[in-house]
Amino acid sequence: MSDAVTLTVSSHKRPTVLSVSPDRWLTPGESVTLLCRLRNSSTGWTFSWFTVQKRSSGKIEFISLSVSSGVSKGIYTVSSVTVNHTGVYVCRAERGDPVYYTEYSNTQTLWITGVSPSVSLIIRPNRSQHFSSESLSLSCEDHSTSTGWTVRRYTNTLGTSSSSVRRSTGTTSTCTISDLYTSDTGVYWCQSESGENLHPVNISVHYGNAILDSPVHPVTEGDNLTLRCLYRNKNPSTQRAEFYKDGSVVQTTGDMMIIPKVSKSHEGFYYCKHPERGESPKSWISVRDKPTLTVQPQTSVFIGDTVTLTCEMSQSTGWEFILITPSNTKSTETTGTKTIYVQVSDGGEYKCKARRRENPQVYTQDSEPVTVTVQERPTPQVSVWPDDHVYRGETVNLTCVINGEGVSSWQYSWYKDSSLYNISDLQYYTIRSVTESDTGNYTCRGNETRGSRYSHISDSVTLTVSGSSGHIVGAVVGLFILFLVIFLVLLWWYKNKKGKVSRSPSAVSPQQNISRTSDQKRTEDGFTPLQSGDAHIYDSVDATDNKDASSAVTQAGPSDAMYSQVNFKKNKLKSKDNESDSADITYADIELKPKKEMKKKKKKKGNSSEGGDTVYSKVKIGDKGVASGSVDLTYAQIT
Image (tube, rainbow, N blue to C red; front, side, top):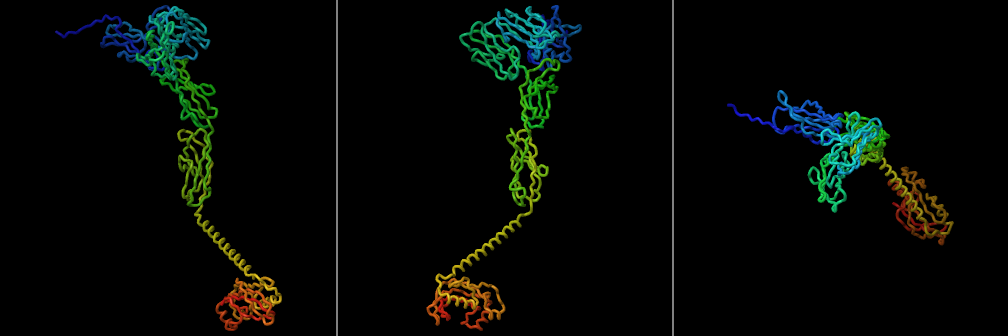
């Protein structure tokens, strides 16, 4: 006999289970997966998915979804949801021939919380949880006047609508519930005449004594989230409550919790618990993605720069973007990117928002604004030190000055004859020991060190390098020597003149006849008086080297002698004719004759002769006969 096979027949009415991942509250563009499983694992099954709709007649219909993949694995994925995916979903399994179908699974509702610029769902009081016996008002407000809207709701009873819902035409549709019951808990939304569903919200009615005051609509990413614990009737004696997220305590003090700048990570189920009033129902907090606007390469630019504005969503597919300019004009960009060649008028505040291509009436909120600042592009100034004309071997410093507002630091590019020469973080560029090859036209341009801005190119300065400056130094030294020689000659002349003046005797004989006789005699002997009167100083300055010996002997004149006596001693000489008269005479006779001629003159005239050819050196005192009287004579004979 064969081995036994065990057949198990399940009596469970609904063997299939439908679940949703990651969550049933979504924003446009997110991905969602529906998982259909059998309670008891077995093989050979395929799966189908359906949406549940209620007709106006009250009949419930299951509309099959076209699924191309995941049929055998029980997986149905929507990669990018839109608000049209909002609805009630079920699944079932099948196998065999003839085909056996399971019962429909449990229901799962997807809520895609889109935002329409023309329609708003207004809830009063504006919170998702409410106490029983309170009143509630919901309104679909259409900012255009073209379409009527209806407030619809879905409760736990499949496909039913509350009797409190009423339809109205025009611009407003309102649903008012004066006395809430727990059976009013459900999802409410606005539905257009064409069947478009917008702004679904979850409303929870609670019999207990504590509820969580949480926002009805999704919170925009980056906004602050405030949660409060509210109590029926009056506040308790203590205001301390605990706040939970997904079952974990997040705060234990006070009855209010603030979450600054929420992000997707803050999504989840929140509730509060009070030690006296008990625990509130759970509320799902949804965080709505907001586009982010960025400017590249930077927000501060110069006229003529290029900037690229990019509007992005965290779910990157299925969006188109609207860029809002400073002049409040709007342009639609399918890729979310726009490049601008900047002019002055382009400065100002930019924003963007996004919408789904499949449902262009549903927009996100505006992004955070970005301000673009536009300024004039600066022109640098170049200076050269010590001069623009230098000589080989000198050191030259080039300086680039840029007055660019808002730029903290520059990197400097130096150009020589329009070719890049050097790049430096310093505005000074030094050329040491220049040569003729450094001659040229120099310009500079600045590039922002930690940015993309750059300046104009400066006007050029011309640097000229000449040959060695040694000949200049030689000329300067030559001039210095010339002036030094002139100075020494003038100094010698001045001292010589001063010496001549100092030869004047301190006392002059008053006898005019003897003086005149002495003057006449001295003139005849070849001496020339330098001043008139009784005091005589003789000076014959003639540096001529007379080689004619006979002329020197026969003619004694001023050109043959030089006098330079500065001795003021007195010798009194008596005359035979007149012993009472005397005169003070000081002179020195210096003849610059060659030595040979002097010897010849000495042989002819003897040592006692004192003519014009005599040279006096020593100071000798002797008696000289004077016809008219006696004089004091001091001789300096140079031999």
